[in-house]
Image (cartoon, rainbow, N blue to C red):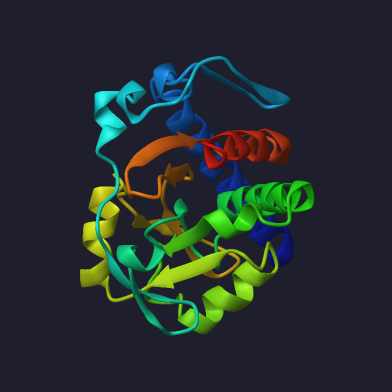
Length: 226
C-alpha cells in the first residue's frame, strides 16, 4: 500500500478522533451553561428572553477570569488592565491548530465582520483576544500573521509558561500536548469556548463554537449594548 495513502488514512483517523473528543466534551457540559440567562443558543439564531446579569451565571463559571500579564502579538507587554473599560472576548487556541481553532476563529471573525457592518463603532467597545495554548511555537509574529487571516480586530496573546499557567487556571483551561501528530505538527488539546468578560473584568456569558456567525454576532450585540 502506498505510503502517501497510509499517511492520509492516519491523518483522517486522527481528525475523526479529535472531532469525537470535542463532541464528547461539548455534550458533557451541563445544558444550563448554554442558556444561563434566558438565552436560547440555537445555531440558526438566538432568542433573548430575559435581562442578563452576572448573578444569573451558574456557580461553576461565575468566577471565571482574573488578572494576567502577557505579551500581545506586537511584542508589547499587556495586562488585564490594558483592556479595562471594554468587553473582552477571550478564546484559547493556537496558530497551528488544524481542526477546531480554524472553525472557531472563522466563525468569530465572521461575527465581528457582521457587527462591524451593522455599526462602524461596535468594535470599539470590545477586545477579541486569543490566548495561546502553545507558547513554545506561538511567537508574537506567528500569532499576528495567523489571526490576521480571520479578522484584523483579533489580538493574540502569548508569554512564558509561568505567565500563562495562572491564566489557564483562571479560565478553567487544561491544555496538553497529545501523543499524536497531524501533518507533522503536535496537537494541543484545549476547550474552544468564547468567554465574554464585562468592562469590569467580570464574566458575563460564554458560548460554544458550534453557533453560527450570525448567532454569535446577535449575542455579542446584546451584551455590548447594555
